[in-house]
Image (tube, rainbow, N blue to C red):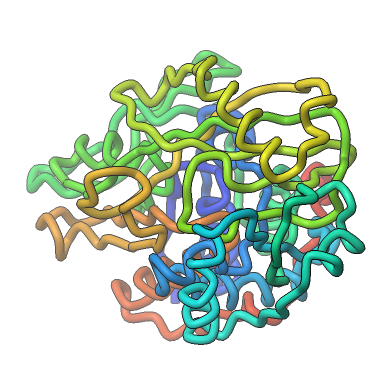
Length: 387
């Protein structure tokens, strides 16, 4: 049996993970990306391996996805993860009032917790605000974004997937019925314009999925929501420090290598290819970060950057939109054959997003091929650069 040819647009977390899953199931896969691997949002994440605690009260579907995939990633790609754990810390009465909801939410989402006294917190993390009242431990972690993406890409290449970086999609090519049959591309390195055909095109472009889908007259309910993060040149904490309260701006400080990262904000933009780093938001990150780890005030800013989340839903603000993911078969949603979109989710859920997408592809073509990515260790990220 000749397997259908799949073309994936986007080599961020979702694109590389989907390429890996489909290639492992035997599909011929080509991935195009206008920059390099993890060129967009995926390369600008703060690198939190979510325990799900952040969403245990407000978005339990996402919380369960996160804790389940957290445990899987620890097994299949340990070399890019620092399993350092996290703390949700209470600094005032508002935080304490949230504790009961937090405990109930985590129990509902099977997220393991341990309550700590202030003395225990400061023994573990002496640079946390000394006004800490209490805290909960959660199985957070951190990961190296580029190495995570490269590990999936290297594993996809092992099964025959082809990556064409610095290759930009200019248009979707349509047949006389308006169905997608391939893409027009620009090879930016060679400065060549050409076309590629495919039995199915997968739109895995994150916050840009709506702009891609519209080429075929299809619609994706996406709300691109950028956030600013700030890195500092000292590592004053060893665990992920979260504020014990509803998700808000600047409520997490992460250790990353020899640095700390404070994140993040949430706002909306109209031009996805130009999102400014706003000075007022950088200042806010410093102020909010200091509330959790006062020593940040003596650290030097290493850099400020932003990433645009591909949130799905109809919430009025980025904080009210669900963090879960959705896969859209546009034959069902828009009457457009040949196009599937996967978007939303978190970096932590990239493998699950790929599994769902590959299941949709298999169902579309009537192919029986089970997902094996939960238990198969990934290749080293270094192997991506080995032919």
